[in-house]
Image 1 (cartoon, rainbow, N blue to C red):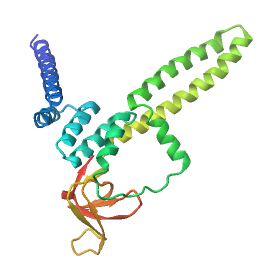
Image 2 (image 1 turned 60 degrees about the vertical axis):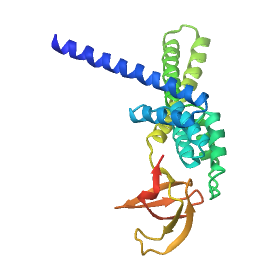
Image 3 (image 1 turned 180 degrees about the vertical axis):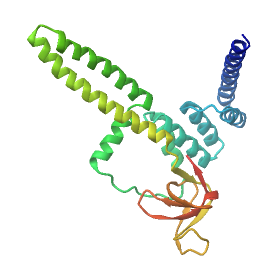
Image 4 (image 1 turned 90 degrees about the horizontal axis):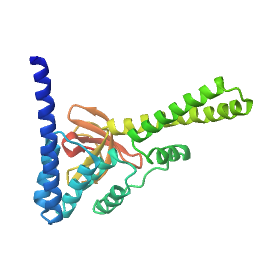
Length: 250
């Protein structure tokens, strides 16, 4: 009985917390609409501090930061929103606008056609969306397979066979796309430069050779680490070492 009461209390506290966070979200949206961007930002950050994470939350927080001319933070939150909702065109548009305030304009290395095609296809939906598609087509696959084995009509059996092959292929592809999107969400190797100016070194040491200079807001990929140093890779393939304090992970 005590265990039952304890579980009820836990569920009640969680529901109460969810209701409180929803109220804070409404207050933040109202503050943003009233152009009180400082208060809106504070309330959005309060929700993040409570452990809540969503694409719309990051997107709204990015908008509040952008309105305060904090373009680097805006880029950071837009990037985090895009990680959760890669198919959202509004996030892409606002991110492009915010990136115009970044000093460095690094041209990305051309990707192989299949890699670009696969990435674009995956970005048409989220990990959950592709997972749902995989489940639906798996059910369809089982139905078609049943029709193939138990139908007495030769025509229906042929149709069910080819349709089941197609459904099975969609199941596999959807599953792979869902796994890709899930891995993208969990991947924390991408980061933003948060120091105004950073000299990239050839080795993880302050005495390393100066390679090139980059500026805040630039998106990089962390490829290695050694104590307080991180090896980064730019979109054009250039690599070097910077201190961890100049990076914020997306």
